[in-house]
Length: 484
Image (cartoon, rainbow, N blue to C red; front, top):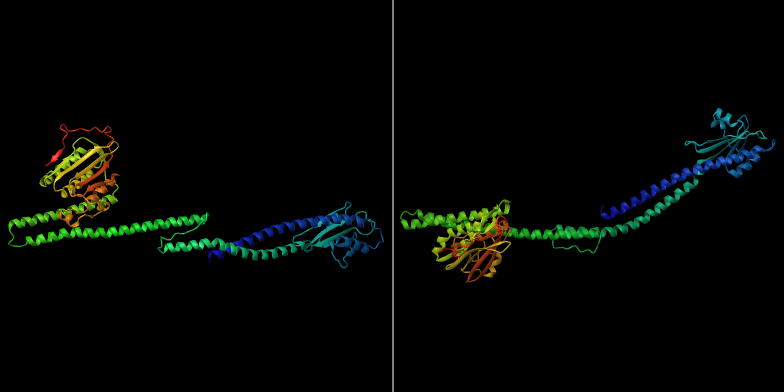
């Protein structure tokens, strides 16, 4: 059953139940009122008859007088003497013996000195009875009984009920017509919304539900549009992640396959029986170099994996940058000197709040890259107080990076010159690791570069609360540590 049929059925049931319950309630109280009013009228008429029959003289035709009274009252009337014998009745043939309704004590009380009126209205009797005594009567009549049928009393209610039922049938026909129209009006936007939602559920997340309603249906439509927009964004994001994941595994496979080929080739050469010592040492160096390259690759992958999943990836401490920069410059003093490049590093005191091991790894990667791509000139490792943060930078005079590569420079396994980078032993993850570590520090890595003139990588760290005044100790000769 569709929603329109349900609405029509619901409105019809509501109407029928409401009208029926209201009618039954009204008829019940009307019936009770009419019955009570009929008893009151009969008792009042009985008093009138009592006084009328009392003054009839002896010898008068009681039947004729009773007919006159009966024509006025429209009751069934039976007139009795003191022995309970019926003297007259109206209409003719009325046989209403009081002994069928009055006990002997009630009859004696009815014939007592004082006027008595006795009303009998029992639920299982279709008539209402009123017995009245006639005191000091001038004729043989001593009491009478009047009665009328309850069905006669309730005849107007029967007519009212018939009218109500007829009206109910007409109302049901009218409500069926109007409820169908109303249900169609109410269901139309819901049916349209259902079709739109089914379209979105089938994958058309670009579909937009257009409605100008200000009611709950309009609100629901807007919510569905927002849900579809979010689903579309999530789907596009998942597609991008899927593409990146596929590329990521392809890159890992490629990065591991190349050194493995070199290792296998070196092992094959080492198995030659007539290989001289110089070549043997060369292939052993190749083995060591490629093994270290694979080790660096998996180390970087573990770092990135921890950044993605470990909430305790960084553990911040209050650390002096002079110590971290001093360590890194010491590590690369000889490699820089071998290429004829100066390594300039600041040495003044500067406290920051960061993970010392991770920041040392950032500087390690940046300085390592600078040495790889700088053939002459200077590499500067500096840090500067800018007030509310500390800027650290690694600047070189190397080959530079074209601006077209800047947006993807920190993507995993991205290289500006793939062949050349592999020749230099890189894993393609160094700058991705740098970005991940700095992101965990709520910072970011920035780059400035010009082809043929060099590059500058810089980032910011939070100052240490233990050193709020930023006391900086300049060296006596204001020179920097050099690695020449």
